[in-house]
Image 1 (cartoon, rainbow, N blue to C red):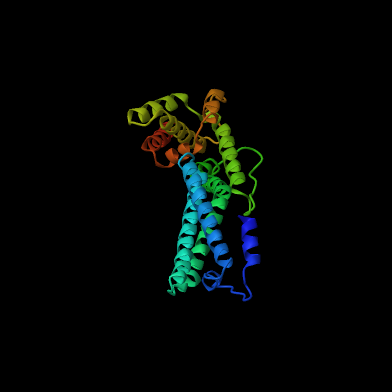
Image 2 (image 1 turned 120 degrees about the vertical axis):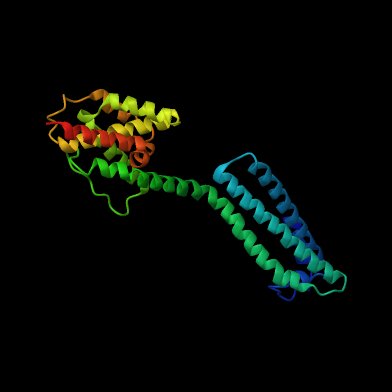
Length: 284
């Protein structure tokens, strides 16, 4: 096809340069006419084949790759529209009519939009996952805020905290916040109450929470009670030493975001916080 295009162009009379209306201007010129028809037919076939192949793959894949394939399909469908407009203008010339505006005015914008869609179809599967991961990291970082601030409002682990630069990536900020929360759990270990944890878990399950969410509510309730206990006894005089089992139970939490949300919103957690404060007020 490529060789035929060059050959037909060389054989034809193309003495005048036509940057915008070559198709219609040379629509009746021997050899150039055949070249125009050949490139339009070849372009239509290529667009149709690409559209069919990408559509078949788009129903087999998911996520950003599927979005990219749908964009490519949309772009190549517009390529077919471009070819129809070109064929209409050239065919009108053959029948003695002037529909040149289809080729010079209508077809170029269609081709421009088609090019943008096809380009986006190749870019989106590459950029989309990264943007999605960054967004998820920022969302998790923000949702962990209540728990992180509560754990660092009073006495914290030794060594202080590290200030993050404003340009630090979301993934690094999230890792730092998760590590700070887990370190805060370790500092609360002497104040953890496993009996309270079990009771809160049973209460959450009885309220209809699934096992994963019930575990998060129980973790949050034990943390809230421990924070209240530490606030009234920062030196740990009333505790009987460290409780490693409770500390490790919190460290194994699979979803700190759920724990943070439960810490902020769960009535079971609020009840544990009130009960801990009430028990502390009764002590001599």
